[in-house]
Each structure stands twice: as structure tokens, then as C-alpha cells.
Figure 1 (tube, rainbow, N blue to C red):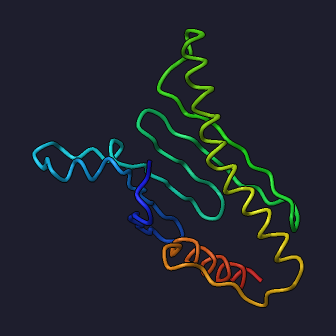
Figure 2: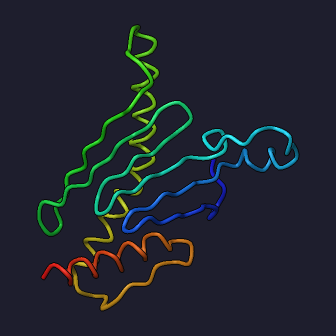
Length: 152
């Protein structure tokens, strides 16, 4: 669904906006006459430092807030932001399915995060490196370190 390693990242202080490119953008390249509508060709992700995100999709958005409770323990709060009231069972099914897709996609990421956290707790690695396509994550860690140092 999404182009590998294709995104645009803009920063505004500690916050950022990312445009995650869909494969459908390739087909658009052949038709430059149509007006460009970002939501048709990718997802917009607004990240508010330190731990809130809004993922804007074609017809709705998802708000996620990450709340660290203790080392190794975090709560995720999610809200689906839809364009109107749910007035039928068909609409309820549609929006419930969208939430399931969102949770399944991020569930893969969350499982990876748990595994990484367990590895970090072992003390086996003195340092970790981000891949070249994970610049937003590396930047977040730099900003977090700076904010923690500033507040201590």
C-alpha cells in the first residue's frame, strides 16, 4: 500500500509532520494535470512532542497518545476521528473495521517495540543505531535527550 522508504518530514520546533507516500502516487506521475490532493496519495502524520500523534487518512483520522507509566510500562490511548455521527449498523461496521486495520498495522510496530525494550533491559547493547530511513526517530531521540538534560 505504501512506497518503501518514501516520506517527507517537516519539523516545527519539537513537533513534526510526515507525509507517508502511497504506491498510488506512481500512477499520478503520468497525469500531472489533476490537482494534487495529499490525502489521496499518502497519509499525513502529525507528531506532537513528546507523545501524541494524529494520523490523517483519506476519510478520517486517528489520534494516539503514548503515556509512559514506568520503565518498560506504557499505555496507548487511541481515538478514531470520523467525519460524522454513526447512524447505521453499516456505518458502525465500517468504522470498527477501520479501527481494527489501524490497530493491526500498529500492532506489528508495538510488538517490535516490546521486543526492543526487552533487549535493552538485558544490557547487552551499549548503543543502538537507527537505519538511514528512520531519521525522524533518530531526531526524536536527540530532542528527547536534549529536553531531559535541560529539565534536570
